[in-house]
Length: 330
Image (cartoon, rainbow, N blue to C red; front, side, top):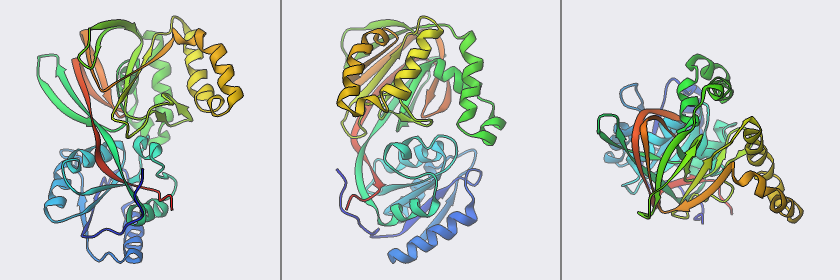
């Protein structure tokens, strides 16, 4: 649950991506919101290609920041969250860029910088889960990453790898649709081994497997409707369509059934009747930890960004390990 609204008790830091945001507008909005909240001390940190925000955030916290505002895309938000999670500082989000994945799942608007600034300074503070992914690369090298929304192996990772950067800058999320249409005809199913909570290993021949902390994506897609951002669990979606018709069934489920029908008693009865047909195409699991392995290196994506090829991924969740600003309920 959210706490009552509170004003930052110390300095506020802004970690911003100069490529993703209109910095003049962001500065004006933040300074106005800070003045209304009575916050006198603002610190500004610009991200770079070499450092997406982790070190800037650590520097901000070391300088006394109690609130760190991430102004940029999903990569900037993830970088700031990675550095904030082991501190007493709170993360606020000024979403920009393509996906705004975490912002969408916790109710932060991506259409108004001014409203997002008001939430940052005068919203409520909520503790949410943060995912941890340890990847094993092609040569056995291990790397640790945090994730806020979901990770994936299979066609979704190939789709992200196929996304044209210039098109993404121009049309945003629609660039993923373009990449999907180009990746789908060539996509091969992947044999994925998986184990839940250190249980017995299982395997599946999948088009993609997604492990999520929360389940809403852009484009009115509710991929995993029961995923909660603070339940200490990871939700797994396994997609195994046998044909293009199978993909259409999955699309219908995530854009219509999960988003609309399940909200009413009649809709839930309809889902119970039709769900058996789609269950073999899209199935859901839930676990506190997940171990994934593949027979040959496969592309891996995390919160909508590609992270190269891996042969294994170990996933866990730190329950309510990240404090974030959200819209106030009071």
